[in-house]
Length: 306
Length: 306
Image 1 (cartoon, rainbow over the protein chains, first blue to last red):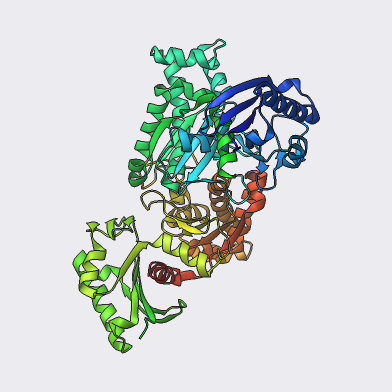
Image 2 (cartoon, rainbow over the protein chains, first blue to last red; image 1 turned 180 degrees about the vertical axis):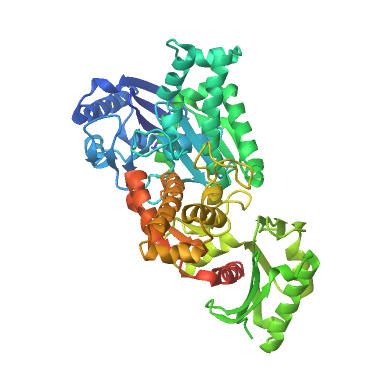
């Protein structure tokens, strides 16, 4: 009997998601656990193993029904050798041979990559970047991550670390970023910075959701906040577009839920500031696959490599 | 008899160079004319035609000895259709079907591309970028240009406009650039800006050559000037390296003659500020092929496409 399913794992700082997908990347079954429940590396790995086995049992599947397991991981990895270098937001992981460990315990082919690459792969194969052979997918959240499609394939760079749009500097005199450098895009438009800025303007606590809602209702302070975010994001993207002459930029992640308020302003910034040939070529879209992009991308990774 | 030679043309704002190269890209014969002698587009085209015919005659070559003619051009071009969009520094060229015009008048296969792409191709095939499958070649001169090698091939982007490292912004509050945007790298480290900065410090006229010489002799003001250039260049390159996870960056053009004074400081800036995986991967070299890179690249273009 031929393989019919793929198991996908999407590990984030907050949630650990597992999904069973068919070969058309439709999610048939999904489990969501809290990442913080598993303090130690070993318990997190065991949770993945247990959950995979549970899914197989619950669905009455044999190992021979499964093409492989794909994992999307929140940090730099060596995707060829299946090694996790480290996770910026989950302590205790350093040069972990995760592929080897899971292969042994699950007796299934294991593939892994970082979450931004898999989101990008998903948006390119099934989402908003479909058909755009040179494109950048960005996730705007706590951090600002990204992945690149170049000449129709995921571009990994020389050590699988490409795509770090969050760490493109936009101000030589800017604030320190978590990465140690100065004036990185992430230091301006990461989640917490946007909320910080909004609090200053509104003189009260305010969530991103409220900030988006108020902007849709034309609240001046909220529009101001989003204009600033768009100006900074637009500036970094001008550099990227001038350098890479892309077809499309896809914007996803929680912050992208601001929607047109943000996207229209980013488009304007690029049209005004990028070079004419490049500005004319590039299209800006909101990501399509939302929270499932990680699972779908992990499943695509398995299929591409099987 | 099989084809033995390639004719290469390198058009710059100052010089129009023509070369006869063998199939190993050795320059056998070279002519240099002043671009400004040819005010009108037609006279410039005629000069190229005449010069090609003169070279053929002088060397006793027939058209059947020539594989093709490659042209490196100082502005955005449609390399597929052989159209010059415009030249920023040579007036009178707008959407010129140069390939068609020259094919007709010279009865030889014509290939063209912009000079930064051809310099990059030359450095990758025969120069400092050899063997580095993901690399950026920069020319530092009046303008700051560049080209990208991605996965072992010249990366052109979606409309042959990729590589514009000079128009990556490094300061959201920066000075206006010629391109219309704000804070572009070129607005800080173009030739004239460096000389302007040096004049301010030295309180007298000073050339780039003297500035390099003084720095080699440890003159404090000269070192300060180069440190500033390196800091800005390094910052832009940090963004590029974080985004593209390159193997190598090759620095050429007149300004690069400052040599180690500049390169060492750029390396330091990248090591200090780029992300660790990316900084560890990338090497910084001075370009190897110097003023002949344009001719060599144009000849490589012909061979690659023949």
